[in-house]
Length: 316
Image 1 (tube, rainbow, N blue to C red):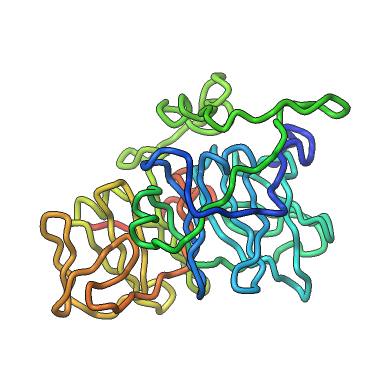
Image 2: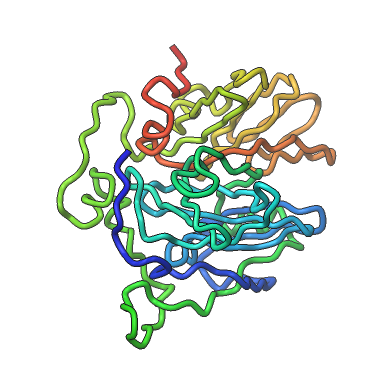
């Protein structure tokens, strides 16, 4: 694993005192990381996360960290409780295999964002617990959660400001990773226009969206195109736990505990057990809901970095 310091610690400012509002001023198709609480759901726009990468929050009294690595396209929500402590996370300025390295301000331990593994420090070798979450367009979140709230635009500072300088305001309307997402290359070098890492997995693009499911010592990544090509729904057992994964027409991918229903996808609708289900939310027209699994949404190259080339779901 290649760990390197790229920018100073906290040059990218985490959001530590998040505020929420009822409406989002951005576009309806802007993607958000959605976390459901017992009271109401919360949405964290990727438009904000690309400038902050971590939000330290508390949901239903439980501390969580909403994390995003733009280079890896990885959205993972972690429980901030570990080792008898409640941790607050910041951006270390390091990359591990092109993935964001977080650090906790209590012990200085460093954590790989995509895997949750502690790379160095007091908790070295430990792994953070993943919370169920999803990535979907703002319009889908608002339709599914009319009483939900969205992260208010943070009052953060630009990561371009060096120590001692007056911080430049962040232009949240900008898309600093747009060209990277549209390019063929991947990793920091590709983002900087200096080339790309090699990729030898011919049947998958390195920036294919993958939903990672882990249970015990087993891990399986579901590439979005493979789920879509299988009709929009696939099943698998991971570490003894049965999972069902749906691909949606808005390039979303969602994983749930498999209830054993015979799901049928027709014209974008999912039907099973006498009712219609929303694959993005797991909710049925009759009021039932599937149990969302704690998953990771990330690019294929990041999943392969963490788990190797054989950890992908295959239909053959």
